Image (tube, rainbow, N blue to C red; front, side, top):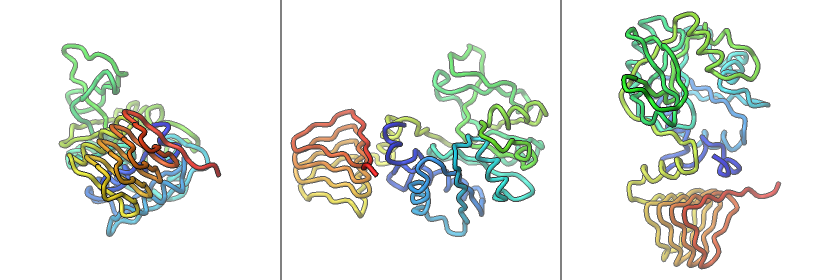
Length: 301
């Protein structure tokens, strides 16, 4: 996601209805979560500020700060060691860099009905060449996980969108050091033959690259424009299908199309921004055209 992550962590990037992570938080809340733990490391203060902007009445949010990047499994182990995950039952784990519209009822039915240690929410595969492919047995057990590539004619593979249910007894086995979920949590569940998956209803969009991010914003907008209350926009500026975010300024006679301008970015009079993302201390000069570009700068501290 660089250079955007020089200004904000990926889950803190703004969407029209809040930061990217708001989607994961709302999914957890809609599934019945009353307490949510969030791991923070890169630009932790900015991440905490983004989380504070998300309103989830009745849900307690706790932050687990990491001094070093612990990885997907190490972050779970750190939260466990701090007593943030409780002492019984299962937890719902959701990646913070996706936009979710999923119904998780079938996930929970499978997880508790089959005694899985880990149960993955799955979707019909969108692009086998881009994302790993998960194959299930007839009983819904995960048979294998294949790297991205061309699927065979008879292959029925599924996509993991970053949502899983995990029993705390599986989390207890994780080492208290940096580690990733596939090599630890998934491997042990597979060895115990308690590693399942189930196709859930709904949709998912990854926000993994600057292009993905801009496309996600434009999909949300659907032709409209959202302007943050702290932004300064000239009355004669021409803005279509764009997000003008926190602290941005857009002067008269500037044109913004299918773009994001946020976190203090400025577009001077007569500037043109089209199909681009501008974050932080970056300025489009008078009359300058920025097309299909990504610019992100932070002030020297």
